[in-house]
Image: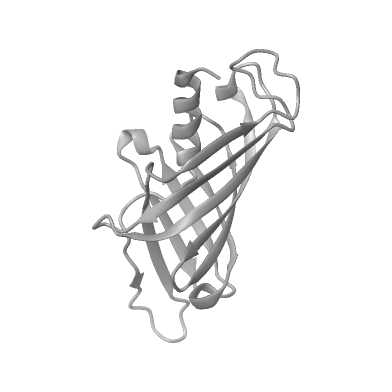
Length: 166
């Protein structure tokens, strides 16, 4: 895989990474209204891993075939740059294409933080500037969490916001 494609894949998949600065906030809603918490993180390149698993014979260096996988990890930092957790993610190509940027990946991620974990799922189209998905659960301080996330391409200075409905 050429370096340009590797960087493109890394940037696209980093869009699923939790990017931004850590902020945990509660809403001012009444006890009868559901409350929300918002979490944001910055995914760090240093200490990250990235592997494109070819389960099929590639049609070209830039292709991505149905069944191929991408596996990556990223340390997560708060707004001050302090590492606060790690993201573990795997994506399976569910719609292949000769040009990777036209493929579709279905991704699952687990975010480990000091006070618990969050699980998330999303479909991702490489090259699309924003990926949205669902928070499907959690442990510890995030037990039974549900919510949504939106990640903007980090190469454009974007970030990820996770909104949990408590």
